Image (cartoon, rainbow, N blue to C red):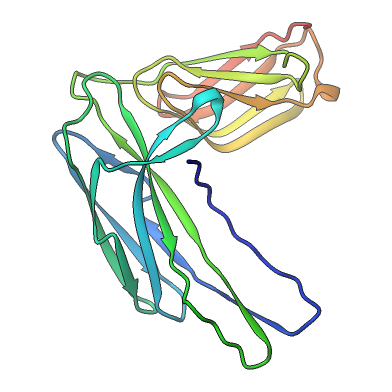
Length: 238
């Protein structure tokens, strides 16, 4: 089951009022371990109406480089559903049910979904409610000693598709790249504000074929949880 953050809007030839919920989460990442098996997330309702939110934990994997979320029963989330008054806050506690992994960090997502009101009425026309979903990463540290990401980068000609930068994480914990920039000479080819590769996973970033020059290396620069990255990656012909 794949879950993504989404929003929808409708454009009609009638008068339409649109209601949108607004909430925020603190912190934006949860880290659990044998020493710290519980965590707290604060949900803030910055809107002008009460807000009902449901929370669920999902296992997070990246088969074939894509994010896949599968519902998990490995955590106690309390409360799992709640209503926050306008301008109010709610504390959500998360606790592991079982033991941490032995050698490799495990990755999850906490999904916060607004539960929209069953009926909306407008005074000047139809009222559409845009429900908001937010999710944050949750990592469970291994108990078998220190873990760390191990990044490797390579050019992939794309096998008939667009050329790509291959990013593999051969380590035992998540690789988090921030302010990732892929350049060739003075030209920026691609970039990501935040890009996560889970342990044992491989992901790809598409590169513009018409702007890529075979024989000239591309440069990959990013800040990461493994230190600053600045590497040259050879670009070979298919």
